[in-house]
Image 1: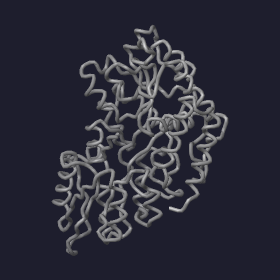
Image 2 (image 1 turned 60 degrees about the horizontal axis):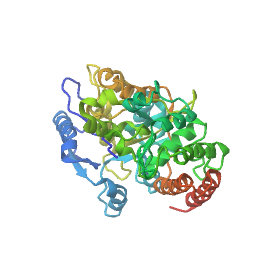
Image 3 (image 1 turned 135 degrees about the vertical axis):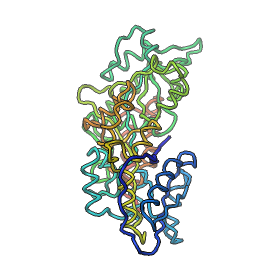
Image 4 (image 1 turned 180 degrees about the vertical axis):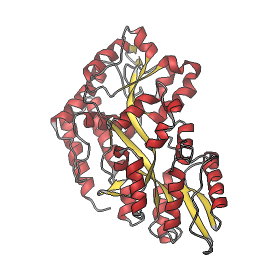
Length: 420
């Protein structure tokens, strides 16, 4: 998973004067998981901010993504917490419950509510409280292979799951041993590859995966079993198999898959100049009331930082529009590197980049309010692992969809009830 929340240096915008003045020098530590190369534009922004705000120094602390949450929690024990952290929404509940994140001041809360799409702001909330400024957002749409569709005589992408099943049967190809060599539709291999599309389909039926109380699920609802039964049909009719995975799309071996916008670079790298002729993007195939699933990163301040005011000023400066109406520092980098922002001003200033055939459907879903987020819980990774295992059991015919999801509901509810 490629997530980028760096910020880019851009000239010609007004700098906010710091209130440091004659105060003691302030060093702000910014923690993220990005490489030196990825951080170079943000480092340049840091240097410009330092020049305009004498007495403020900014230091970057790199932490590997896989170790980020534990390292952040451990730093509290060692009293070495960074001032600013780029928070993956999946981590936020743990960080809030551990007292790591400070609540933003009123002016920052106003900036967030005024500047960002409301559905993405929800991803920065715990129990209704906003904890940071949204950065990059990822959401899901249906990707389809135009060439495979044309070969199968299909003239438009499916708009319902019944159409997905019918179209997948026309596209799928099997060898003499019955192995699916060209999948009409592909899942896997990761837990998220199964559970994130499932969340999107649940939202389309008016059901978040996790209920608002954060302690139970909607998996025992009949609509959830209907969704899984529709997926099972793809396996039973031989249109897909567990060995057909989303990364096979650039090789021309997948007809369709529900995938996030960050997958674009993988597609471009694999398809080269055939990208536009091959890749189509369409709404989640769940009828006219379709919805989709989103998750995001947000920039937050540590509750133990001795420089919280200065940290929030820096975050706002990096995310505020330029004086000439151009993108913010963060927005410039996110868009330049192919990511998606929920910053309204950045979207308005990025029509050239965000208006292409691949990205525009994702932006439209974000701006229309169709992209939704589940409540942030501490056990997201465990929930996805459990749900994937029961979904896969149904795919493989080891359990009926309703039975599999009832057991998933029981196991997940038990996990949600455990103290963290």
